[in-house]
Image (cartoon, rainbow, N blue to C red):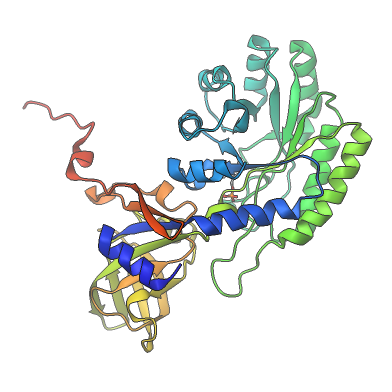
Length: 401
Ligand SMILES: *Cc1c(COP(=O)(O)O)cnc(C)c1O
């Protein structure tokens, strides 16, 4: 997006504000589906938790995507955004049987990731086809916060428990229509992913009524210069070949499913903030913005490095800054970062702010959460109002003392 458009949005709608470029989401979706265009049936289920504004869901749904959901509320958001139940997959972890039954009643595809619920659900609803989430015990990426396929992970049913799965399926006479895995958030190495895929194929052979194989996500997008990015085209070519061979041996054209979040929306997002104070100390220069980890927690939570650009002074001399927030807690966005000279009132843009940014925002310090804008067809559409003081008080009950 053009700097002038972003600055205009900050002026018109105020800061802090999230801005999403629809064109980038659309091109990412197309790049992914093109990479798999030699698979007869491909399904991209967008992981709603990355960015769950209903206008964004609607846009991605209009491309032909389905929706990957992890809570009953996300299921309902998806239905509200116009997804049909058969285009929604419910992949929760550690939720109650009740919640799964509500989702099943709404007609969405259920994905179960533990033996206890599998047995109970299968006993109560043997006619409802169910997908199984396996844990292939493959370590993807180095960060255990986002690697969910390794041995100690709470996600999925261990592949060593396949005999137990099979016994439950036989005892309850339920139908397993899909096998799913989601190994983590970073596919750095295609070979590692293909290795995990072999485990999925091996598991799938045990089930005779499959309609789809879901390979989860983990597509890596670059956050800063020099970051490795998943080579989608090479990945597509190699997995397609293997998948098509599997289908041939299985005797049926299955659907190949993915559920990317970050890949579709991360780079489409920019977070615009305003500099309140430039503060010199004995050791550094702080640029203090009108935000904090209440609005963008990834740097503090994961050590994520979002590139920061000074939109108000793009050609200014570069200097070193520590960019921090305004909440009463350490909320460092960047340390010792080279940025074009910053003055109070400047607008700083955080890149890669589409995924896991607004959706993780909170009201900590009783601050309002940011507004959201969708840039679509060269026009700014406000898709979430800024909160007001009423939102802070909403649901609070004042007692009489
Ligand atoms: C979060 C999640 C995803 C999306 O992961 P990304 O790294 O954002 O692509 C996909 N599948 C499941 C089950 C998830 O929990």
